[in-house]
Length: 178
Image: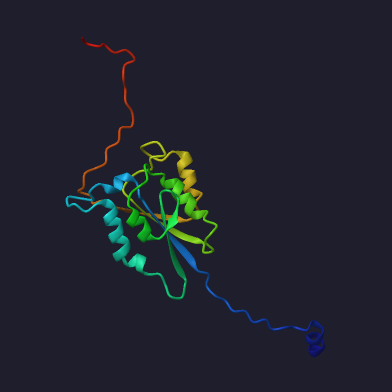
C-alpha cells in the first residue's frame, strides 16, 4: 500500500543551493563648506579627519572577498562616487541636507545590493531643517529610511564649536544720524 502511494504521488527530490545575498554599507560623507574648518587644535581639517577615518579604520577595510559586504560612498549633493573622488574634490556643498542625502542612498535603484546600514561622516546639523531638536516630520523621514544610521563626528571635542544665527530681532523703524 505504501509503495502504491509513493508511486501515485511521484515524489521528487529538489536540490537547492542557498547562498547569502550581498549587502551594502552606504557611507555618506559631509562635503559642506564647514568641513574646511579645523577638526581640533591642530591644523587638520574636518574633511581630512574624515579621509583618515575612511583610509585607516578597520570598518572600511572589511569589504569581503566573498562579496558579502559592499561599500558605496555618497556626498551631500546626493551623488554616488568613490571615496577618493569625494575627498579629492573637497568640500563643495553650500549646505547640509543630511536627511535628503540619506533618503537618496536608500532609494538608489542603480545598486542591486540592499542597504543594510548607513555610516554618516559629518560635523554638524542638517541646514535644511530648523535648528534644535528634530521635529516630527524629520523624525518620520528618518524612520522611513528603514535602516540603521550611525553618525561619526569629524571634529574633536575640544575643537571650536560651530555657531549659527537662528533668528534676528530688529525694529521696523531706524534713526539715521547726520
